[in-house]
Each structure stands twice: as structure tokens, then as C-alpha cells.
Image 1 (cartoon, helix red, strand yellow):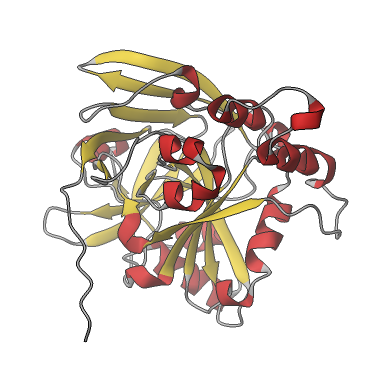
Image 2 (image 1 turned 180 degrees about the horizontal axis):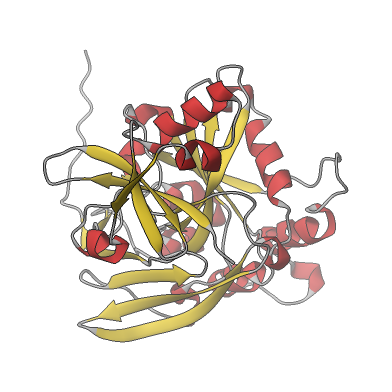
Length: 331
């Protein structure tokens, strides 16, 4: 089965273009510089994003792997005003995710001493997939930042000087654009690394908010249409050219305790998240973490996430951000 993807490209001269990929073939589009611009046009014309892209396809072919290696591919979505792009997500949404979280928290296994994480997970299993039209159990929710925290494929993920850990989270991210009338439009999904500080989170679950205020990487491909219900990929960490850790990960609704529609409802039910023109990148969660297997990352490690039907991997090296002392002054 062939899946349609959109990619954003920036040439060495700074020119922005959009690429349409179907199967192994990829071509530049004419007349649009960004995926957001194309999506706004599709909304205005009352057509699908795939149809809007097909109407602008040129005969100029693109070698996607070569462009990725040359670092000319951008995140699957961005916004010219970084403050108008919101990064947020939901946790404990995948079957098996509670096990990893409880490993981190060293939780008691008996029901009488269930952690808040386990209780929330079980509530999601019970009520995260309601019947069509019904509202299900609300999930754990977190805020990560705005567009300044979004990292491109092949670019480094910087761990703050105050961080206690910099760990990967291989996920799907839903990509949304808010229409002029306040309607959220799902443009598609992308591979993502929802980079987090799991040591800080493990110290006290109430520090989850602190642990999530980090950068996040977004893959180059925006997968259009309804996402496959069963997506199987691999998450690995490469150190000094050799694989340090590798594990399969599962995502898609068949492997989740929540429908995407339920996660979307509980995010966009807040009026402040339906401001026309805004872009939302919403991380759907994962059940696979290297930290749960005792891995301690270090600068120079490379995170690599791959999963069909995405043709390209999402790779990002880990680096340390310089210390930036904060001084608050009275005015």
C-alpha cells in the first residue's frame, strides 16, 4: 500500500519548498513554500490536503534520502511565528506504558498500593475508547513548549545544564492547524522524539511538568489521511558508531488504550487551543523507553527512530546546552 507524505525543504539558498512523496517517488510542489500555507489553501478551497498537493505537483524529482543527509529537510510542520505553534502531549496512552512508568517509579505491584500512573492507565484502558460520539476518560496531559523548542531531523537535541537526564521517547505526533472558524484540522501524523528528563520525573511524579519542558524532534514526513491502526518501528541509541540499545516500539490505535479522537477531544475542548491560524503538535505517547532498561545517555549519543510507512528515520544527536544562569531584576 502506498502512503502519501508531505515534506518541507529548505535549499542552500534559503528557499522554502514543499515535497509530495508517494511510495518511492517524490516531487517538488509549485506555488507554496510551507505545508501550513498549503493546508490553509486546502481549507479555503474545501478540498483535502492530498488533493491540494497533487494539484501543485511538478515533474522535478527529489532524492529524499540525499536531502535528509544534506540536512535540507525540515520538521514536518512549523510556523513562521514560533509562538503560534504549541507542543503538547498525552502519556499513559499505550498498552504496556504503565509497566515502563511503574518501573521508573519503583511502584508496588499489588492493587492496594497502585501508583497514580497505574490508576490513570487503567482508567484509560476502561474508558479511553468510547463509542462514536461519546466522550471518554481524559488522559494525562502535558505542555512541552512552543515553536522554539521544535528540532529538525538530524539536528541536535540539547539537554539543559540543570537537567538530570536526556532520554528519548519514540512516538507518533498528530499535526493540527486551526481554521479561521476555530475548527481544528488534523493534517496528518509524523514520527517524533518527545525528548524528556526521566530522572527528574522519577524523583517525584509532581515534577512531570518540569521533566517535559524540553526540546522535541519531529520527523520530516507528514503522513496524510487516516493513520494506520498498527504501526511497528524500532527505537535505538547509537554510541561511537555502534548500537548501544535497541528495542521495537508499537503505536497506532490498535496498540493504544485511547482512540485518537478521544485524545483530540480532551486537548481541543479548551477554547484557548482553538485560536485560528495556530499549529498544534500533539504527542500521542509511547510504551518504550531506554531509561526503563537502565540506559544512561551521554552527549554524542544518537537517537534513531524508524517505522513504516515512514520512509525516512528520525535521527538526532544528544548534546548539552550551555549553562545560562537566570537573574531576575526588579524594575
